[in-house]
Every structure is written in C-alpha cells, then in structure tokens.
Image (cartoon, rainbow, N blue to C red; front, side, top):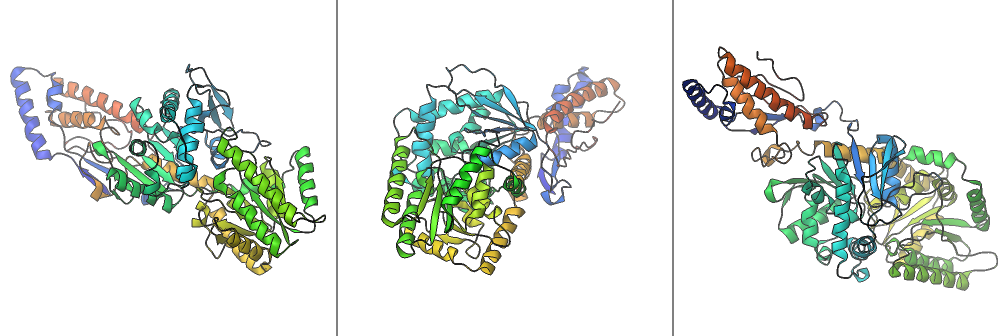
Length: 608
C-alpha cells in the first residue's frame, strides 16, 4: 500500500473538542459548518496495480476518442493512415464515441455533435469552420508540426495567423467535446490536437484525459524550431497521461521538457506548475492479426479482384518486393526507387518493386511536387533498365482495401518499409501477418520506423532509409535468403505481432489512464492537494473528510447535534461518491478515527 498522511489526529481532536464545547455553551447545535472546519486525520490507501483482480481486463468506461481524422467504417474503403486504421476496431468493439472532422467545412456555428452508430460505438463528425481549417490543417499542423516532428527542418514552412487558426480549431473541438462531458474519460490523438487537454480543462471538464502521439517526437534542437513550442509543451502537460510509440520518442520529449521548460521527470512522471502530475509512457501500437487473417480469407470486391489479378499477372515470372505508403515525403518512396535503380543495374530481371501509393495532402504544393518527383524518378528507372519482358517498378497511385493488400503482401517475397522517420508504421506488421508460415517473405525495415524498436536485426533486415545502396543490398539479401532463415525470422516477428495487438495497446493505455490519478510511488507524494490525488482531481474529498471528523466527535447522547452531523456527512459522501463511480479496480479506504471507514462507493454509516 501507498500512504498519503493528512493532518495529525491529535491536533484535529483538540480543535474539534473546542468547537463542540463552544456549541454546547451557546446552544448553536446546528452550526455543523464550524465543526467541519476542524478538519480530519485520514489515510488514503491505493491498491498497487499488481494486486488488482481485473488487471488483464479493459476498463469498463464510457470513453470519448478525439482526433482530426476519422475512419470511413466501410470495409471496401481502406482507412487513410495508421491512426484511422488503429482506432476503427477500438471504437467498433468498445462502445466509445469517436469525434473528429467531417469532410465538410462549417460556417462557424457550433451545433451539438450528432452521433451515428459504428459497431458498438458511435461517431460524431464535426463540420469545422472554413475560416480556420486551412490554417489549422494545411498550415500549422502539416506545414510546421509534421515536418518538425519527423526531423525534416528543410520541409517546414508557415505564415502568420496559422498558429491562431490551430488554436481556434482546438477550441472548437473542446466546445464540441463539452457536450459529452458526462462520459468517463477522454482520449485525444495526434499532433493536430496537442493543446486540446488544456482547452478541455478550461471548460471545466475534470475527467481523466489522455493523449497518444502517433508520430515521432524529435530531439530538443528540432523542437526549438517549432513556433510557440514552449506554449505547446506546457499545454501537453495538462494531460493526465501522455503516450508515445517508442522509448526514443518518450525520452526525446522528456529531454525537451528539461531543455525548454526546465522541468525534471522521475520514472516518467513530470510535475509541472500548481503540482499537476503528467505520466509519460510508451505504448507500441499493434494490429489485429485475427482480423487481418479474416481479410486474407475474404474476397475483395469484383472490380478490385480484377485489378489484383492484373497486377500479379504483370509481375509473373519475377520475384516481388512490395511497398505500401501514402505519397508523403516522410515515407522515403523516392529513396526506395533509387535503391531499385541500383538493384536493376546490378541484377536486372531479378526482382520488381510493386509500389502502391495513394495521394496524400494533395492540396499542399510540397506534396504535389513530391508526387511529380516520385513519378519522374520511376519513369527514368523503368526507361533505363526495363525491357519488353520485365519492368523494374510497377507503380499504382491508388488506395486498396485491406483484403486486397493482404493478398499482395502474401504474394511478395520482400516487404520494403523504409520511411525516413515514422511513429510505428503498421504496414510492417501487416506484411508479417500476411505471410505463408511455410514460405514467408522477408521484411526490409527502416531503422527510424517505430517498428524497428520491436523487430531486431535477427528478425527484419534493418537499413538506413537515407542510403539507397544500403536498401538495395538488403533487398537483394532478402530475395536470396534461404527458406529456413526466412521462417526463423518470420516466426519470431509473428510471435510479437500476435503477442501485443491493437487491443492490448488500447487496453493498456486505457487502464493506465483509468489509474493515472491515484497511482503514485510513495516518494512522489507531497500532501493532499498537491499529490497525485490533488484538489483538481479529487476536489470533494476534503468536504467528506471534514464532515466525517465532525460526525465522529459528536457525543452519541446529543441527538440533535448527531442528526445534523449525520445529515451533513451523508450529503458530503453522496457528493464524493458520484465522481468516483467511474473509477474501476481500485481500493479506496478513507478512514477517520472514531468514524466508520468507507471504501469505494459503499453506503455511509447509519449513525442514527
């Protein structure tokens, strides 16, 4: 047990006895408020996580998920990006409300969000204001934050007013979330909404609020380049729990706090102004291998099936390496094409690249130029090395369903996942999950993808994505690798994919969020009001404690004062119990000397 001691009972007893004598002398038997000011002595006991019976179960909470992008919730329309792919099964399975931007822009009015069914959960699509959305999304989010978070300063751009639009959209999202304030917890996602937790607190929402970053978090010198970086980092500390994909990302964030805000951390816990504690932890996102196996067995739509057949027919007679990425400069598609230039020059006809890259953020000039550059580079490589019988690179600027991708993954002898930087990159895990156990392919993986923290060099072939010749050598090694070694590498990776799924990821995060306000090592406690259970997080406890102390000190023979004290105690207890009902798997013992002990949300003692 961990203990947080409150004022000494002897001191409280002396004060309470004095108040009782004065009340008797003056006949003011109803003046319970004065008696309560004496305070109480109490000990808060919190059961350690390892002793909880429900440790392996997902917390039963009414959850609100908030992100910029929403999944289509259509099996024939693949989610765009890792965030949507990750959260869709969580919502369908857990009954959460998922709130985010619609495809339409609004006029600035803010009607309450409309909920539509999505599996067990609901989706709330917001028409965010047209006046601010471009500055928020195309501007600050994706022209400043996105390249900075991927440590690509030369790609950063921006203009005056974009940060104001970014903050305004976060304010709009917070006001929409306020309509869902009666739910148990809020889970905010990704770099578009870094300050949303602070905005929710400003509106008076006091539920647990967690944040998960799907991108990398860079080193302090890179963060220094982000406009208003200090304000953004301070606002992130308004979250109870900050989740990162990898230890590298979390350690970079903690280093930034020390460098830019002069804030220290201990065991991932940061104490900021007013005694607020924020817990930082890593939660490496996974996939649902069972669902992926079902996708592999499912039939794609007829039109898509025809497209897949054509692709594979065109690749007949050659080994296949597959790359699946949005057309984003962080994905390293251009460097991958350069790598195939080397492979095609040294081993012509040996292997072809099947590159599937749907458009991304095509409204941004930077992305339009990248698409043109990739297309021109592919045309050059094919012109230089291709023959009538063989083409080095087969390029499709299309989105495909998960069922279609699963078939193409399995057909490929090599999976090439070489982003310049990535939070996790679920394509790596999907490629592993799609393989034939008896004849699996080999994963060539960027050292700077989050997945590389889980897959070691004895499993994937790890490469520097900025070095095309290194990628080329790994592709050739993968294509020629003997079957026993391929099986050994694949089996080890598949064990990890199956051992920590998307459901483990969401369950672990939500359990930590559910516990984030009461669990703290003993050497981190200061005193009630500035500990993990502080006034902002458990504001009604002092009222109950004072009422319990007052009730305990009343002479049982003084019926009038006893009745009044009990009524006051019961009202204080009822007020305290309501906000604690959503807290699962915890043991609360709030004792007072002379008064009955109460744990959790049980009934108050019947003192009459």
